[in-house]
Each structure stands twice: as C-alpha cells, then as structure tokens.
Image (cartoon, rainbow, N blue to C red; front, top):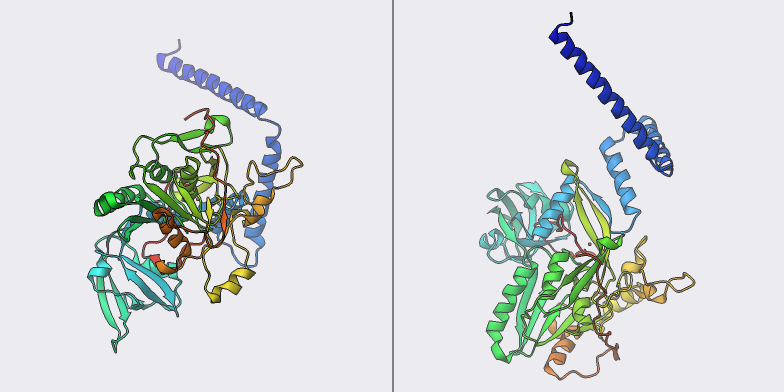
Length: 488
C-alpha cells in the first residue's frame, strides 16, 4: 500500500511534469509566433557577438570590455540622430545636476586661461563670494595639486563635491606679490537661469539662459520684482532667449503659459497617433497684456524655440532678431539603473498653428542682425552659420519635402549668427527691441520685416535637447538636464 508521503511526492512530480510540458508548449508557441523578420535581427546580433569576441581576442592591446559595450551602444544611438545618446552613470549624474539647477560647489563661474583656471565672477551669497574670491583671480592649485594638465571639465569636477566639505584654492591675484591659499567650504549652489533688470524707467528686461527646474519659479520672482519696481509706468517687456540652448519641456510650457490666457502652447507627436499630446495655456497673464518683444538668434534652440513659437503664433509677442537654431525634437531620458541612462528622441514638437520648426527654425517677425566688430567680420563671412540642418543625421522636417521628394530650400539656411555684444549699448537687437516697445523704432538695420504668421489654429490632438555650444565660462557645477522629457 502506498504511503501518504509517497503519494504526495508522486503527485508533486506529476504536477511539475505537467507544468514543464505547458511551459515548453508556451515557449514553442512563442517562438513560432515570432515574426520572421526578427530572424535577420538575431543574425545581426550573432554577427555583433562574433566581432566582439574577435576584438577581445586579437586586438593589439587588451581592450576594456565595458568601454567596448558602451561605445557600441552609443554608436547605435548616435546613428539615429544628433541628439540621441548613451550616458554613462557619471554623465547621467552630471545631467541630473544640471537640470535641477543646484549642486554642491563653490559658486564661481570659471574659464580656462593659459593652463590655469580664471575666475569670471563669483556668484552672490555663495561660499566663493563670502571667502573673498574676485573676478580675474587665477586658481593654480586645488588642495595643493597643480591644475596644469587638467581640462576645464576636470577642474570643475574637482571643485564640486558634497556639501560641507572643504577645498583649498591657491590664488594668484593682480597686485599681490605672492600666491595665497583660500579655504572654501562647499555649499548648495543654486543657478538662477533668469536675469532681469530695468531699462530706463519704463521697460523690463528678462534674460532666460536655460530651462532647468528653477526657471519658471525664477521667472515669476523676477517678474514680481520688476512689476513692483516699475509699477504703472511700464511700457513693455523684453524677453531675451538668445543663445538659450533649451532644457526641460515642462519649463518651456510653464514660461509660455505665463504670457498666455488660453489656447495651445505646443503639440508633441510621437511615432504613433496615440502618442500625440497637447499642452494648453491657463488663464492669467503676468504682464496684464503689456507689449512683449522676444529676442532670438542662431543660438536659440529647442525649449526657447517652443516659447518663441507659441508667443508668435498667438500674436502675443513680436519676435525680433535672426532665425533660430531649428531643433524641433523632444528627448526623453530613460534611466538604466546602475548602468546610466539613454537620451532618446521620442517626439517632434509643433507650434500652436501646427508647424514644425525642425531643421528650419523660427523666423523672426522683424529681422535685425547684430553689427559685428571688425575682427569677427572676416571670420563670420568665411563660416556658414550652424543650425540643426547642418548637423549630420538630423531629422528631416516632416513638411520639408517637395512633391518629388527633394528637400525644400529652407533647411539649407537653418541657423544664423549667435553673436551678442557684451555691452548693451552696442547690442543692435536689444536696442531695436527697446525702441520698438517705446514706439520710437525706425527701419531696422537689416531693413527686412517678415509677414506675421497666421492666427493660431491648433490641430486637435488624439490624446492628452549640438544644440549650440555651451558658453565658455562655466559655474563650478557642470552640465544640466533631467530624467524628464527635454526639448533640449
């Protein structure tokens, strides 16, 4: 007679056998259901494996396996378009720092000069300013180690670090006979992406340098201060988006919403119709309907083009300057756990009137070109302005082909000069915008005014980041973005 334990054992084996058979059947069915076109993909993966093994075994020097795989992944992504890429864990951390707009550091903007770090300026109320660092100071050593031989990025990386940790800077200062040491304790540094000032006693000037997580809050704070300072005398606002390379999509939407009462701000369209989304403005205009002049140039890209396009289509602002960069795509940061992240182009964006600026850019309502100094005229004449259309492998504009399939001419001229004088009085575009708001503007130096775009007629939505080079001066943080959709 079979004992209960034996019966239970054989019952378990029987059930396990049935489960195994079911699994085999399911696996067989899964493989038989795999599309035949995938067999080519598997063949190519086998080829990649063969090449990888040959490199590992026969290359003249022993390669780094991790670097080989990372380079292969980055090569795959880079072949898609100029803005898709792989980010190592360190690059991903740096990107998160940049988009947050805050980091552990000293609070100085620096550049490289003759092999040493030159202080461009200390940021107010930061450890560097409190320690007495001055513009034009030269930093030769960090914690008694020479800077000579380091790149600017490497030196910046050393100056950043955990909050409340010290670092000793060796300073050479004009007027001082000997170098001297300054001990600085790192603190949380917040980069203000919005700078503002009053011009005369009737115009508010606002410059947005990037779209990070702090941009919208800083914009509101700046607007409140300007409105309080000028009161009813204010005639209008200059919104300067020149050389703004972009940033977070949600921040571009929020800034646009500040000036709009209603209507679409931007449409984003992915590969499929169900991935179409539309962002709408909510009631409330922080300027109370005052005139707005938006400045753009060849360095205005992505998120800054979203703002300019929305205000232009709604006829809420007059766009002044030169053609923008022409980056009309949205990248999503997809984290890969401990392995970093990928930046993948997931959508194109369209202005409220359903126009794509990809590889075309935003055309200003009033074309005003900057007067170049003599030493730049010959150089600029020899170099074609770089825009999105000049980047190898850029996405084509969906409306950018003729009926015969050839590209329209607009892509060929995407981009324009990104030169902006440091002195406001020499800034042709700014001075024209100021006179425009005051009602004293004459024919612009470039003598060309574009026709106004059609009224905004947003297309219905089915459901609900090269870019220009970064400025030479860098704060001691590094570069920004976030695990969010970015128009940058």
